[in-house]
Length: 468
Image (cartoon, rainbow, N blue to C red; front, side, top):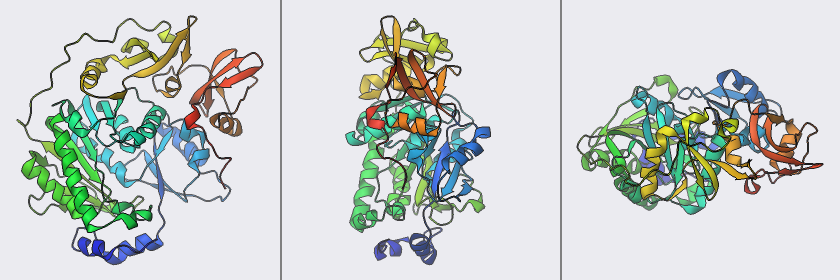
């Protein structure tokens, strides 16, 4: 661990929860704790003890599992397991995420959990931790996951597909372009690019990049992103703003700017004192924020605040004028593949047949009218010679029929499948077979006579032999 900049330590003096000696002790002497958040459908509560045992199997033996109080679906695990070699990880049974950032779910549930049918947007979404969390919240009916950096879109797409929620769209757009869809979202999440001081313990290289000038540049960029995107938030809508920085300029000062210049009002939240989360207030307006420091609980440094957009700050986005591309006429044989296929609308696209929950079709058209959508429905596959050649996305989707027949593979065969090796289980049927592990879908395998084709995505395959 490199020396933490003195300029940062001096700037943090007097901030809520900051203790210089404890801060240094946490960075130099307390190791990071990995944490996982379980999928609400793929890993129901009664299956999680067994899932944890599977995650933690390791030659070294003992693991310590701790609860994350603000996220009942999550657990901290130390030492860090080799997640890559757990097939359940690739099936989307859980997501590996910093524990502090899971506070987002608690905050939004507290602020708007009594509502239903909320349209959400995650402005800076890659790699997908907050987006997968948002899509798991029952009051979120649709989610746009946006990532402006092209190189980061593939990992967002992969994690979204593995999580398997049909309510999620993906775009690659500048926040200003999203902002032109005025009043289109009820919830906006901006996990803003920041100076990264909250990640020093996990990423020592970030120490080299930190400087007071970098903090100031990040603060300016955060305000630009917010100013560009906020017109898309509806009147009375909720903004969740977060960073992985400790600096006041990137946190409380940004809250003051949001309240004074951007028509937002702070939303204080009740947080149990035993959780080790430190409430703070901005200097000018007293806007409420919540600080996390490493060492007190699982997770790294983090800051989050919720604000409400005041009434009368914008005009509603018009509904699309063009005719809907979605049809009530289902894909042939849709009921053989989809649970509740009657709840979807369909279209045949150049990539194949697509489906979308019926209630999201209008919102999808609004998004498609102004954005570069990279995912705008559930890709089912292409019909060839009267039969569906299914896509990998369908295998991992929660919309797939619960009773769809599949091949159950044990550990080693599941890992061979995930390495994209050719396997042919004796119980495979001629044609398409759904590959499963511990009841979780992994993907498709097509048996042809005495051989089989492995259709696991080439770019997603496990490339290493095993943990060392």
